[in-house]
Length: 353
Image (cartoon, rainbow, N blue to C red; front, side, top):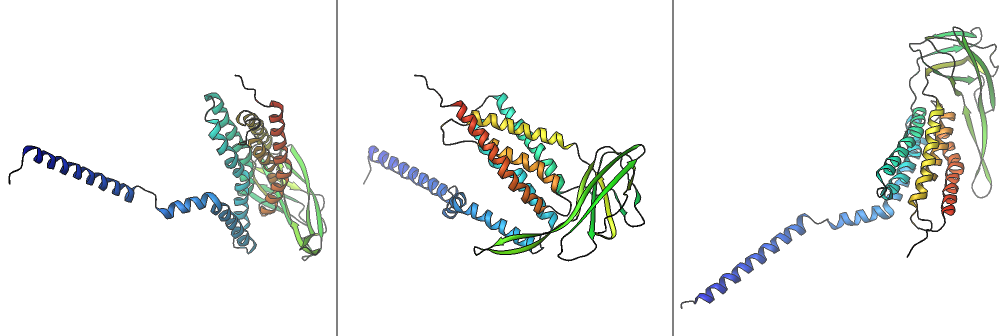
C-alpha cells in the first residue's frame, strides 16, 4: 500500500531520533569506557590519602634504618638522607599548605612569601647538606712522635677547614680521651685551635623491667674552621701529643671552607620572622585551619646551626638525630609559642554589620 506524506515524514523523524539516541549512547559509552577513572585506581587514591601514605612512610623509614644498622646503607648515604629530610622536609610540610592561602594575597606579599622560602632554603639547606656531603680534602699531614711540625701544600688560596682525626693506643671497650692543641701558620698569620677525641660508654635503659644495655660511642675526629690563615702552604705544629693516641698520632686533612656561617644564621632567622608574619595574616584568630610556618622555620633554624657544628665526615647520622631532637625541643616548640602569642595578641576579628 502507498504511504502518505505525513507517515513518511514521521518515519523519517523517528529514524533520525533513534539514530541520534544511538549516537549519544555510543558517545556516552565511549566516554565511560575511555575517560572515567577505573575503580581500582579510585580506591588506591583514597587509600593513599588515608592510611597508605603514613604507613608507607613508616615502612620506608624502618627499612632504611635496618639497612643502616646492617651496614648495607653507608654512613654517608644514610646521613645525607636524614639531613635532607630534616632540613628540607619542614619547608614542604609547612610552606605548601600555607601557599594555598597566600595565593589570595597581594603580589607584593606573594613575592615576600617566596623570599621567605628562598631564605629558608639557603639558610638551612646549604650548610646542612654541605656538612652531610663535604668537599674532598685538598691535602693532609700527620703529627706524631718525632714529627710534631709538618707542612701541607695546597692548590687553593681561600679559607680552610681542618679535620683532625686519630686513634687510641688501646683498642677495645674502655673509655679513653685524648686532647690536642695545634697551631697553624702561613707567612705572618697564625692561629691555634684545640679539641678532644673521646671514647665513652653510654648506658641505655632497655625494656620496662629496668634492664640496662651499654653501647660504645666514639668521636675520633673534629672539624675546625680556620679564620685567619690563607695561602697555598700551611704549617701545622704541636708542642706535644697526648699519650692516649696511637703511634700514628694525629691526621689533619684540609678542605675548602664554605661562606661564613653567620650569613646562613641571619637568613634562617629572617625566615622565622617572615614565618611569624605570615602565620599572623594567614591564620584566623579562632580558625581551625592554621599555618605553622614559624614552628617549622624555628625547627630548621636550630637544626641548621647544631648539625654542621657537630657533624664530621664519618659521623653524620648520630649528629643529625641529636640535632633534630634539640630542634624539636627548642626551635619547634619556641616557634609554636611565638605564633600562639601573635594570634592571642591579634584577638578575635571584629565584624561590621
